[in-house]
Length: 160
Ligand SMILES: [Zn+2]
Image (cartoon, rainbow, N blue to C red; front, side, top):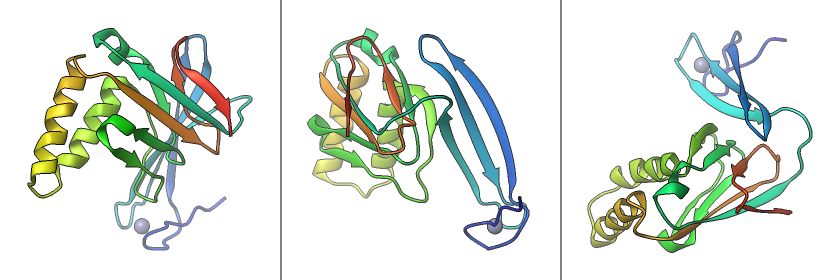
C-alpha cells in the first residue's frame, strides 16, 4: 500500500512501528509516519486487541499519582477542568505513551508558546504546583477510537 503525505501529497510516506507491552493492560503499537519529501512527521498509538469507545477519568492528588501510566491517542480529547485546559484531536495532535506528569509537561509546553498574560502566568503556576503534587486535579481522556487509557485501579472507565 502506498501512503500519501497529508501535507505535500507525495507518495512514499515511510511507516515505522514499535510495539510496547504494558503490564496489566496489553500490547500497544506506536506508529510513526514520516514524509521523505517535506519532512512531515506524525506519531500515534494503537491498542492491540479489544477496544471500545471510552472515557477515562482519574483524580490525581499527590506525587505518586503523577507516575500513573497514560496512553493517549491522537484521536482523543484530554481535559483538566481545574486548569481550564482542553486539548481536542487535530491533524497536529500526536499520540503518546507517558504518565500523568508527562501529560502536564505537554500542556505546559503548549502554554509556554502562548503570548504572555496574567492568565498564562496563573496557569503555569498551577501546573507547577500540580507537578509537585500540591494541586489536585481530574484528568479526563475521551476517545471514540478506544485507543486511550489511564492505567490505574482508581481510574474510572465508562463507555461513550
Ligand atoms: Zn510530505
